[in-house]
Length: 361
Ligand code: SF4
Image (cartoon, rainbow, N blue to C red; front, side, top):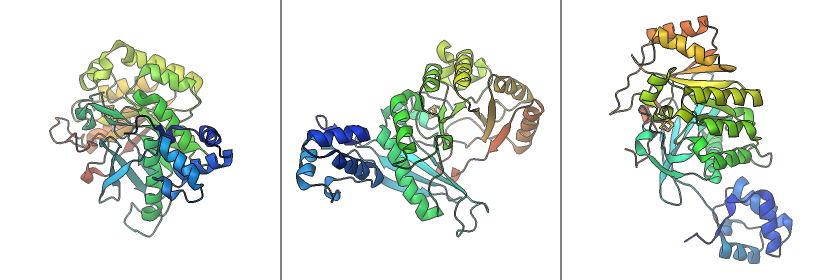
């Protein structure tokens, strides 16, 4: 129904101004239209009360407003909240809002210190990592830049309401491999950092990838300054290939990844973060830590260890605290900067690797 119509939210501010001019209106009307779409979150032309009726009629005849529709919300004991949205196609995806409180969230009166939104960039994912619920869905659909932006826009309002502050950080760690939806992801970062819109600092935006080497180079060449995280999860080719099919291809194995990261490091001043999910008995030995320290030395980096959230039906188990502590010690002794992330929202399947929409369950 919308095939021959212009998706207004694909247009940049100057393109909306040009559209207004082409319809006999001033460029100012185009700027107002931009505000309605992205600052006010308008979902219909009726809402745009300060635009002339004739202009709205012309827009209605030749364009449409793409929107994501909220279907359900689920709150975790730790106050993490998962929202399920539906695209115009009817496909569902998830967004997670993760507040961080000084007191751990036990007192509801204090505003959060930080609120992170974990956005999806695709419905499903083609990467088929064997520990991940989304990977079991296969690839279904790419999100558009405005679908990604809208997740943060809605999360921002929700965060003010629930946690007393706006969103502070955005991580592309929800459903999908962001670098396989490259143009839309970069355009969404442009929207998120626009001073006319949410004005987020690119330092607070992190794009996480399984290591699409060619696209890491493209990211280095782009003007986008977001942080880069690499989902490593295993420090050698045989181990990594056994859980991450992407590593079985020569153009995306560890040596290709290393070359791409070296290129990235030459073009960016940012540290690369390696995400490393700890799986009991698979990648949590001292030898694994020593191999991981080797990888961490490729480029300026830090390692983020993640305690795995078990997914029903998958064989991976959570590492014990004592094994984690020994692993951390071995990394620190090798000069690696390490942080440990204890996942949030586990009880509502909102934690890393647990996102799977209704299609995936
Ligand atoms: S871990 Fe990320 S890249 Fe791998 S299957 Fe899951 S969503 Fe895709």
